[in-house]
Image (tube, rainbow, N blue to C red; front, top):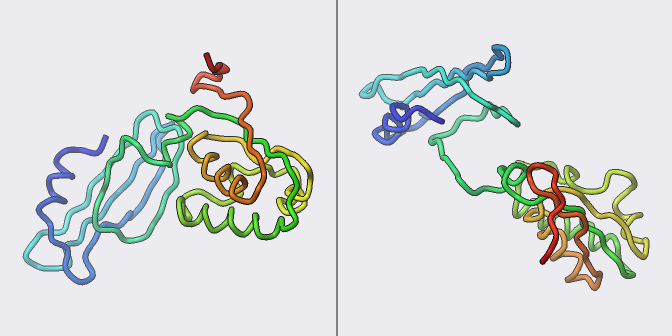
Length: 179
């Protein structure tokens, strides 16, 4: 959890010009990720500060060293899908005359919904070239959180292919069955 004192401080700062948040450094101490965050208001009127933030129970991380101007806490966000959503496998079936178009639409939809936060190929089948796979009459398109794979299913269905989810699993790996 982000310290309340840090969040309160950010609420009172109105960043000016070159001000913002910056990850000055990060390090590991056993299993804890330790972040040193510099806050520069961009003005002499508000004192610049540094904060040391220690993580607990970190299961996944991505460190970004770009300047920012806020910290947001989400209960629901696609970056949390690995931990909060049912995991599944997405298969497709049918024939397409234009697998290149489907590939392009998958890529565009991915970038539109997930930007660079999730690499395009992360949840897709890595066993073969995606365009080659889409030339097949059926195949495994991807594995991962169902909410993310639904985005891909919408694209393939809009292009005349059928989608099918198999082996939905909860966060403990238990298979979910439709009742």
